[in-house]
Length: 105
Image (tube, helix red, strand yellow):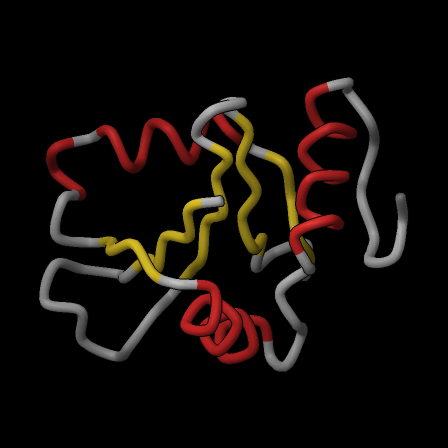
């Protein structure tokens, strides 16, 4: 898994604003959806963002521990799903599954 910490602007003022988790090999990705208040499968949005040269200074890769801290900060306390749950979300999302909730496998 690759974890991307997202910032609102290239100056990174105000700290992290989002988090993407991508399985580069499989091409799947999830992100924290602020509007829905949960994790969402959206590999197209993640790929567009990280592959857009205009965003090169608006994200950085992070280790799991950093991603866990960022997830708690941006979500109001929700934790980052463990890697088994992330894989389940990626599988469900790729299969056209509906919304995902923690603990659902």
